[in-house]
Amino acid sequence: MQQFHILSFEGPDAYSRAGGIGTRIAGLFEALVDAEIETHLWFVGEPDAPGYVMDGFGHLHRWCQWISRHHPCGVYDGEDGKAKDYARSLAPCLVEEWMGPQLMAGGRAVVLAEEWHTVDAVLHLDWLLRRLGLRDRVVLLWNANNTFGFHRIDWSRLSKAAIITTVSRYMKQIMSAAGVDALVIPNGLDKEVLARPDPEAVRTFRREHGDRVLLAKMARFDRDKRWMFAVKCVDLLKRRGLKPLLVARGGTEPYGAEVMDAARGLGLKVVERTLDGAGAEGLVRALRGCEDVEVLHLRSHLDCDARRVLFRAADAVLANSSHEPFGLVGLEAMAAGGLACTGCSGEDYAVPGRNALVLQTEDPNEFVALYRPLRASFGAARAVRRAGRATARDFAWPRVVSGNLLPRVRLAGAV
Image (cartoon, rainbow, N blue to C red; front, top):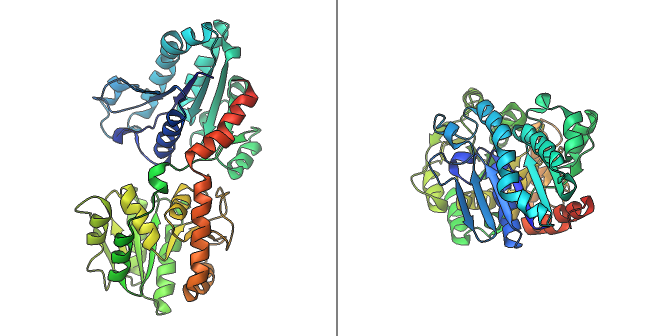
């Protein structure tokens, strides 16, 4: 195997990051490059950045830039037009300028495409390679991170063109119900996420909030993310005299207003804050003066340093959802040494009571019943946190690549 091509809408640019997929792609790309594999990432990048950049083994190809200039609000602004252009134009360029010469010289290649936006590009690439007599020299994979856009996919055609993969056993079962037999290749964590949070910032954070029960939740404002459950947990803890504070970071979705109104309706004090600086220092300043606040709604992006400190300093990170294809936030919380509270859908990494609290209902009493013994025992809580951090290290991208992705590629014939 001499070339690896990743096809994705999301990527490392700020314009291209809309959620967990951008984080996944950036981490996977970095791990392949660090393994000294010639890796090309074809993504919908910043409209005014260079269209092509090479740095060592890494090659960035920003696509659809002429469309993105008319859609400044991010990668999914104008997504249908971008998807059509991506499908039409990318495969010929990839084959003619990059993959074709490599294959005709006796080399092999791997292509990993992500999400429904790339399906037509995969079909086009498969057709073009067959027409040129080169298809048997390429392993073509298509990955589902979520169920978004499944109704758009012709599964029969896609299954004939590519090996279909997904990120968890939960997603495998969902896809099996649609007649698709997907291979599971999990998400990974990059080096920045796995770094230890600043211990002094963690101590400052905890010292300023004393004996309060500090909860954290980061997710889109979506009903599947169980935001109402989080609000009810705060209410229940307050009624039991435990002085809770929920640090909430959602998106811009309208459901967020409904969540905050529900919190106020329960008699909880809600305030909104924006960070006045990056990193842990900005986060610590944003949380000052919250002695009588129960829900702090952060309206600013939290960078990796700030997230690590928040996850580690919190008494619990509420990362449970009713539908979670993988659960990257829960695994990030574990990596920081936090106490992750996951659901029981796609979080294959979570072992109840050993490395996480696993919540199976929408009843806040379940969380309180599982959490209170850990609050009463420093040793028990520390053991769960340590086990969680050890689990997260097993999901470092280099381990996922060397122990899962590349063996699957070799099995498929790219050697």
